[in-house]
Length: 594
Image (cartoon, rainbow, N blue to C red; front, side):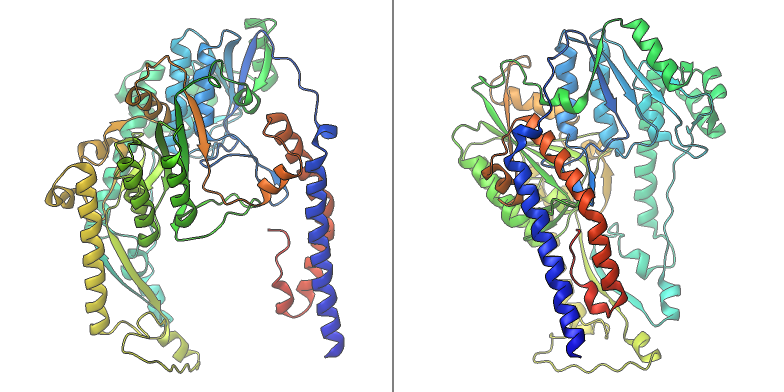
């Protein structure tokens, strides 16, 4: 036993020392960025802006992030669309050259890219796209929908153009779980609040089927209309092609879905001949170029990103791609923007499926207070702003959503999985000592009692009344009017306008244009966007204290070096993890690489 204790102590000490070494190494690199920085080349006089649409455009505060030992994209989607609009008016930028095969963008995000590419093309500048394949034998209608916005589409001769139908399917586990003595026990307000149905039903409820068909139908018609307009064919012709899809490359060419068949080198060579003397610049670098006149702009707008599930407090790891909305820090961020005398308005970008009711209410309160201080609050919805995500949006002065945004879901549910019978089947006995009738309400070993259900119903009634009441207040409607479009139902952005939950269709740029007019500017006037982050001071600020600057080349150099350093120590970390796995499971507890 004593030997085991020494082994355990040694392993923990080794892991701790290695973690410290990694951290110190990163700090050292941050303090020596000048020596690692690549020479910054001059900006070319003739630029082809390159977009890798398979690369992740994050919805978040931005900045490079290490996920595991991989360096991920730094550019946010709002950054990207602002930069492409800047390129439209930049005489140095002569074209866009894009690639995509399997983009991770959501449908609403794709619509924002489509809209700004349309602006770029309307300025008389070409936008070309190359794809090795779109779907590789599978349906990929959203991918083609994004590609169709570009005026000249190239695909590899071996490609599949996955223009095919869309659909969804759900699994219902009630009967399956019952075999093992497990039961889902949930209570909801709103017949459309269908999330618990996976565990409580044997199939879709009619309400679930209705809202799902409406949402998918809205998305489908948006894509059909967009493709028809882009490719100058009828909507009926697009539907016919979808029914026959996916398409071979030759079939897609015959049906005028693509413009050229060729390989990447042929695409590159054709572009060089079309635009002789032009030099390529990727989007990340172009984003970092200063906007002429922006620094001197007297009007400033705070841009706040609210991305992920909503909780009361927490902190995002720099080594994870997952972001969250933490009410404690988000409330402080909104408050800072509201109290900043140099800030003229707040532009809140939301991409959230919801989360904690109490946390959502905390953020809601700060937005209401910001408005009371005279700061206009404008919301731009991303892919999703539903349930708690809608809760924090609804007090805004104006709400913008893309046609494909998922929003609404004004409703609430609670419940638990009950495993008491499953434990009994396994001869596992569990005893409980409690004080107070409600102490075991959320115990997983017993179902809710009638008294518990009564309590839960009171709680949900109060929450739903508060949600709909505040929605009515924010949307200038009666509670009865809100209730008709609430009840837990999700809406596409396009349908949410008709339901009165959203003011106007459009992405971040449309919200930005409105914000300009709201603070007395003309669309062509310069504006300074100031990013307010909800992240707490931590690892990134420490790097700044040790010499890292805000210059884009510093950021790029640091993360390039950090990624290299992480890869060097990765084998050592894997050895430690392997040693831990060979011993008792307790040794797997330390997490050193996340």
